[in-house]
Image 1 (cartoon, helix red, strand yellow):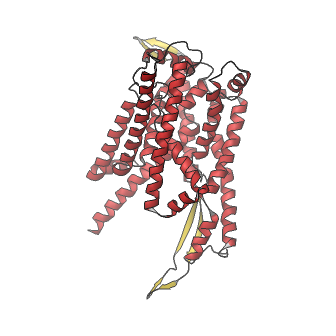
Image 2 (image 1 turned 45 degrees about the vertical axis):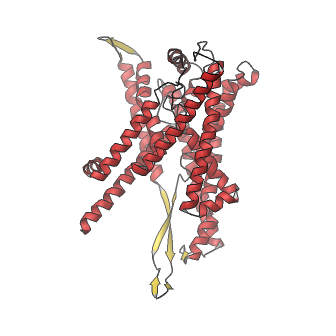
Image 3 (image 1 turned 135 degrees about the vertical axis):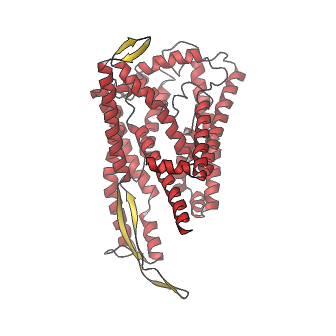
Length: 445
């Protein structure tokens, strides 16, 4: 992999793409630390420290997952890429329900461009709603329950409206930056930006685990003691093992062989080739974990508006952090969403019909309904271990909380590690494919 990056930097075209992507990511991270107008950053910092060490630490780590710490800081890019991800998921689900969207999806490039336009509009609508909700919570004191400091300087309508418009405009800029990376950079822009936000919090979280296990003072610096260094090394070792396991499962796939019969097209004899249908063990990717996390965080966030009620107390005690009910519901929702998402993204009937149209068949399986039933059977058999794998990975922070020192800050688990590994693999594959194209071109010359 290191040689591939070295070759990429020596290739002028790829070097420009990589430097352009790094420049966009630098702008993105800069906007993630610039505060929105009217925000009292000193009070926000103090409330953030209190929240990260209190009983609601699990909730705030979940909120900060896709913002790299920007959301609770109320910065210009506070909402990050989450409104666009939510809009994309909603449009993808509506494609199955609304015939018009399904028709656009089948039209190819022109239809996909129209769906992308709808996704942009829905992103801005969601950004307005989310920014209004978070600014309202910040003004009303519900963003950090228990912290009595004022988070804004002026609570009148015009400064509040300015904050909402600034965060919404920041979401539009983030969406534009992501599309620029996709068009002119390396990798999928939105995925690379999520990768950047999550990876930005890893060093601080790992170092926080080392500090929490005990510290010593040396020349004015606070350093971990022997127990802290042992905890630091243990977390790194566990993280490396988790990454190896995630890479192994993410690369695993079932290859169903497909043969195409020879047929005459005009005066030419075509077909007779053999290929395969790759079905991944984790066909759903990270989407079920995102769905389950979003659904579980919804009642927790709603309970912040009435923190004194009995329902809010039960939700905070059982669904917040790493409680038993939280983990059980998370595990069950991930499995349910995995089956649901795979069923709407991979249609055995459509695949079997396309194979029959082009003269393809699976050896030993008749074309038509038998092929459809066989594909559905294989898909369900693969989704079972894939969904269990997602559920276990998502519960890793809970196990770390029980067995590792400072486990409440354990960074290698859940959605974060799946996204980091998945995006890293896709980006490296894209760089290698572009290098192969250029090498083949030079060879042919």
